[in-house]
Length: 341
Image (tube, rainbow, N blue to C red; front, side):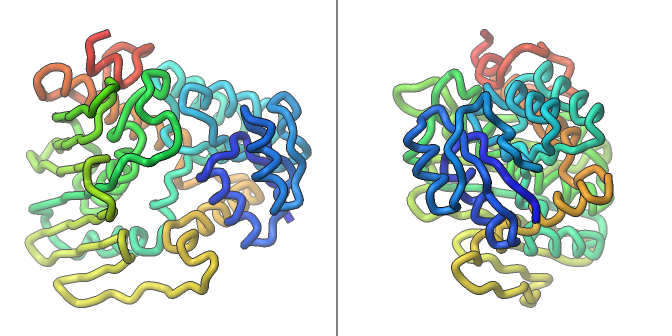
């Protein structure tokens, strides 16, 4: 049985804790900026509410689900304290922070998982497996459209970025994985258009074009202006077929219009399983036991972040293309790149 601690006590930390419980692991400690929130989260799991400086609190794995500006310091401190780290997305805010995380993960035998849960979701894994069957790609689009979450500080300058930085890392990761599986390799440039909201400087709607060496372009849309009913979907079309996935409101998968079977899960953990939280933690526990680097490594998280940074810089330059790898300022957050700070 693996012991898990939570660094942060928000909704997503609770999802990771529920996944741990489903797998038969023990949540032993919860730390939060708010002692009351820590106690509230800890109580149903029979865990202790502790201070941040008491972590890892006897845990084998610490879930770091603090605000992005805290990720680098929190993750590195847990690695150095001897725990493996499941680090929530986005990886961090700047390239300097990302390189610190990647270096620390390497020093500690790759014992850090970048929590891109969709990479472990059955619908996305099966879509990736079908990607080579579409032939030469002609279209790739991944979207995440929903309303702005009513919790959290997502639109604060301290957070570092808005809809693309926080929500958009999901469709960006899926697009990168699908394009690679279809033989396109990695993107070589980015163009982006961002649209802000009211009473804050963050973006609430983002449209991104990923350019590939072959001349192919993939499209990613991420929005907090999508209305109350979330729509998360992906489509990859090619000369030999089309594969399409819906993640919200209901997971489904089709190839050339024919339904592709997905596993069914029993409540109350069905959503955690559909969206990859359970498989993600199971794989990480196995990676730790076998001494292997996770599929979603710190390096992959950095790869997604550099695309995000390039996109914000593009938006700040009237949607001009920005080459990858990103060579812009290493100490700027996405919002600072967008607004020219």
